[in-house]
Image (cartoon, rainbow, N blue to C red; front, top):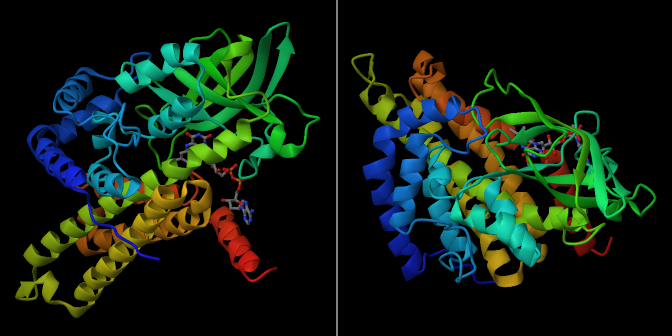
Length: 401
Ligand SMILES: Cc1cc2nc3c(=O)[nH]c(=O)nc-3n(C[C@H](O)[C@H](O)[C@H](O)COP(=O)(O)OP(=O)(O)OC[C@H]3O[C@@H](n4cnc5c(N)ncnc54)[C@H](O)[C@@H]3O)c2cc1C
């Protein structure tokens, strides 16, 4: 197998422009943007600063970079986008500035592939256009959602409509979203993998309630990770995405590239944490020299480099497999990349915190936020153990077991 991770000429050109754009427009206002996003209460999707940056990114042609469809995006391969996504991942909000944020990217991909012309006009075009945001609701507080075939949110036929009742939580970016792609059980008697359907539910439909943002590591602000209640929510028959019973197949498809986007972004956090650690170690006076003279500190910096480079290779390999053989053929590689990238990013950021001493735990540097994100990534989008089971299944199958 030949693995070529080099950027195409188009990818290289976009990477340079994106880097220059972030330096000029984004980093100077990053802290201000952080505060604005943290205060977001909805229903509007963005605050004024974010709207302004998005307008500029769009005018600069740095928009929907993740879309491999040439007619809508830039026609980049997943490997190309991997390099760009890493750059975006250096900061929490840079992906949103370019309309490349989670969960909208995964949502746009499945909508693009499965929406009817009417659904396209109502939801897909505004999402591509960036005038609305979306969330994806699968996980439930009272269901072990690693196995989503057990979800209890129920959609029942009423004439041509569906009536939906249920309880979801950890629904990222629900505050300020206009659309919820909701996974519900539409036929409890069907085979487990055909029980679920995806419904396109407007967030302002009667009966949809944002109960709260669930505090994660003490943080509950901004677009959040929300607890949602659905009480007798009525949607028309044409609110089903794809067809009735196809929910789990669509969910698998959604989590293909979407999962490696998280991993790509996490490499960006890890690189930024390493840069902060190097600069701190090289400038912190210590025992008549600087901290970076210590062999123990050097060992941490060296281990970080090994971990980051190894994670990048695995993530790009998964991207390469998707490019060459499609997302279904890439499940094993995606699982390997997901487990490894989430684990090592957490360790890299942890070492960077250690090198900073007390400063590393303060909000004066972004390391605790990165640590929280990387810890969460070991559960979000499939817990480590679920991916390890997938990898082991492939290993056994490859030996005929
Ligand atoms: C920050 C964050 C954002 C999220 N955003 C979203 C979102 O936008 N939309 C959404 O729907 N969900 C979201 N989630 C939820 C996430 O997808 C679920 O938490 C995850 O799928 C696990 O489900 P659970 O929490 O119900 O854990 P459970 O299913 O109860 O599992 C608990 C633990 O059991 C172990 N386990 C599970 N299965 C196996 C197995 N097969 N073998 C061995 N051990 C196993 C694992 O250690 C796992 O962590 C988010 C989660 C986080 C942390």
